[in-house]
Length: 105
Image (cartoon, rainbow, N blue to C red; front, side, top):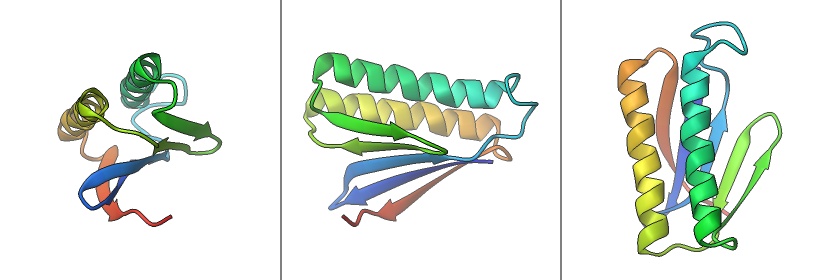
């Protein structure tokens, strides 16, 4: 299962953590993983194209996105990404879990 953790501080999204595998199909053929990856990559690229200093990310076993700056457009892009991920979760509830945590530095 893919776990997406949304970390907030004072109702503002500060960090997103993507971990796990959807296990819908074999690696390389998993449409759920492909969907999550596409949503994540498209959003991160759009934000970085708009403002290169708005976020940073690391890809190791998991993907960690740290949101460093926000404004109306960046917030809209992040909220749109979360909405898309929630729609995917509704279609594949056994393969994606979305949770919210409190952000701590």
